[in-house]
Image 1 (cartoon, helix red, strand yellow):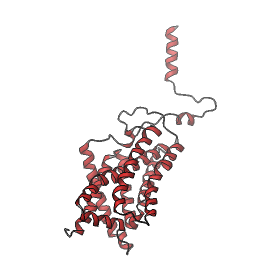
Image 2 (tube, helix red, strand yellow; image 1 turned 60 degrees about the vertical axis):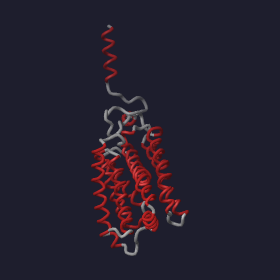
Image 3 (cartoon, helix red, strand yellow; image 1 turned 180 degrees about the vertical axis):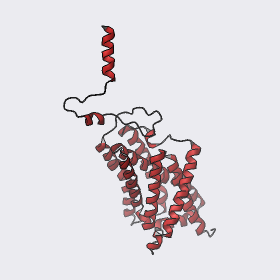
Image 4 (cartoon, one colour; image 1 turned 135 degrees about the vertical axis):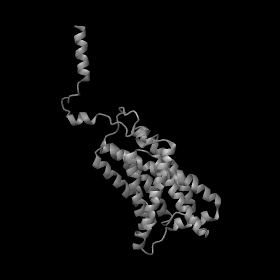
Length: 280
């Protein structure tokens, strides 16, 4: 009798969950936690917020991070001067990184593996990042050869011009910008925000088509937030965002995106400084 009861209990534990009264099969399936994308163990993750909560995290937690630079530009008459170009990325970007990690771990109850934080080795991440930089340089050159010609009279933004001029005069400022500003305030912040938003949208709509749409939507948004660079800048950054989102979709790694972004920014500003100095 004891063996029969144990067998019955074991069969009941292994049987699929049946819908209870007042709950559909869809409700039962929706309650099953989704394991983080790219999680090495592939095991079950803690229960995460539902679709509406994921969207609210994006709207209330991430959107203000992009509205703040726009408000600062409005406060400065449409352009941010050198101090802002150096301090704002470090202060806002650094605080935003901490904020995004807090949202990921504490609010969304999600693992850092879902952001590709630990994925890949240092050399493979570096190699993929440099390949991304090469792709970004091709996109920028193609944009200058096409879109820039279709929108004559619109050169680089005044704040970028001022930044290059001032950096060409002060090697210490150049070092600060090419170091913590480019790597932390620009690359790490923007790429972490990108993969965080994609992660939230992919959990809300996990289908293949929905994931592709999310990549495209995030790329369009990335281009729009660079409106101050004019049509060529918006188009080029939009395509770069599309490439970065696609790489994260297929590779699930954060750090190649950071490397590709930072090295591209360093090359772009560095070439501008060399041009001002008459060295190229």
